[in-house]
Image (tube, rainbow, N blue to C red):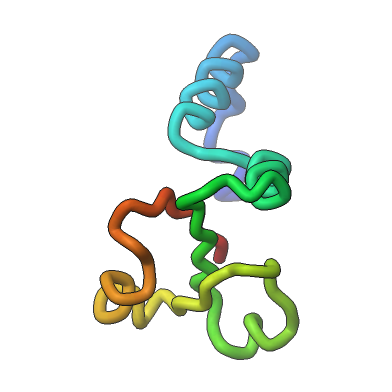
Length: 88
């Protein structure tokens, strides 16, 4: 039995509610791009991918903070007043 098909599809109304609720707490790449282009202050993009992925390419201006190091380094790497967007 498929694990994907074991989960029933949402009704259209439930799907709209789900996606609107997500947008209350999440953003998308076009929003991030617009803010970075506009130079919005206090916006920090944290790239939590590993070293190999970081070396393959990254967002200009992003801070590299792999997931395993977030707990020990975030307080000294990310200003406390920053709005943080994570990328992984």
